[in-house]
Image (cartoon, protein in one colour):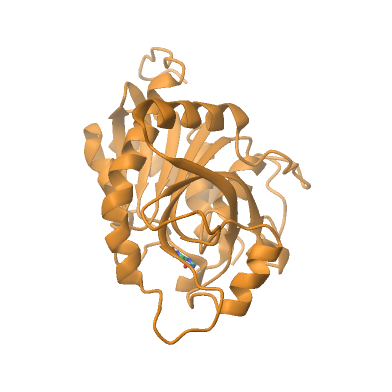
Length: 289
Ligand code: HPA
């Protein structure tokens, strides 16, 4: 299904009518990362199922609502739960919330996910700053920008040489260091899922330079960059992957959710620290753009 620009506009209008906040920063929270949204002050909650045409997740660990409010003095619009391509949505629908953020004027996107650790120095419960990605989904024909170009947002052939903003990465490193949180760095590979990877697929991913693997994020980042947003991405390493066939070690979604209990507090510290370092928002008077 090709989405229309006015669909993004109508959803943005619905959101505007339900909150007095004027968010400048968007956040997408991955599996088990929802507790971050509990910290938001004077929140407006908008369940996805009350927004016409908005995709809804059916995956455990994804709450399914927008939370709009203040965090560290910044006005944020948080997606508490996201949808995935493997749920059967088109990749344009999966990334539609990022388009809505762009219509709302958000300039920064902070994206988190749960990922499998490929780099052998990673342990379950660790964090990885995403420095780059390999969008295998996109490379195999499921790029979210396929179809007519939305010139309102960006150019037909957008540059992807710096998908993850260097300044935001630097802020995240600094915050993690000050808080004594180990923050690995690496390349995130995005596959469609929902089946986890075979050992041969893991060896392939290792060979091509991936440090972590997951089933989200890259499409949203491609759309965010197309629309000129600055992106910060952090993976929570929920499990380490297996590169040789074995009978005993299986990756499960329960394992992913369990690890998020260790990951979420560290991630919250880093995200709040980065938000705190972003420039103060201009005062706004309602009714003015
Ligand atoms: N593979 C793919 N996606 C994931 C994994 C994994 O091991 N862990 C969490 N999301």
